[in-house]
Length: 176
Image 1 (cartoon, rainbow, N blue to C red):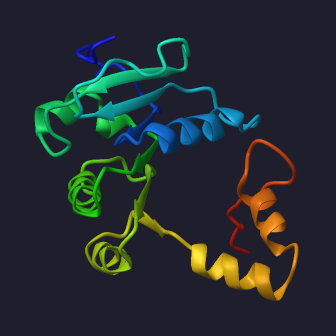
Image 2 (cartoon, helix red, strand yellow; image 1 turned 90 degrees about the horizontal axis):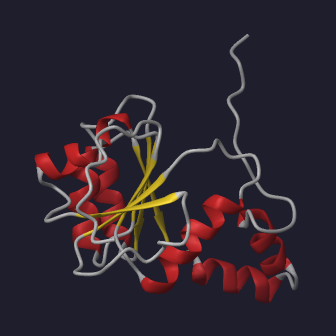
């Protein structure tokens, strides 16, 4: 409940660094809403003084860390064996620092996704890492496209949601 448990035994798990009361719940709902996803634990990592917000969900574990960049704390959540990581901290500076720290620590096939409000942080992190996929709000672009092409907003929502409709995905095309 308090997030003090040791998770160094986990592997191929999903790590979420950061807490936003509404957005984090939606992130977890969408992860679990993917019916074709590999069954693996989701480990929510926070530094806020709080209790496990998803105690009723056995797929979601909870770790309270003193820092998102402390080596011992990152060993406790087994960053090196994580399969997927989302970095969505309270501030863009925290997200940048956390993603930059995680980048060299993770396995080669681990995918890190980080969310930023400030697009200059996206450009900067892209300069220093090759294994972090940076995301930023596309609200302006979506609003303009929806205004120009009525209904395109609904199409966009269908494509990105794992909860309903047809969803976009990516796949590797083999070399010939």
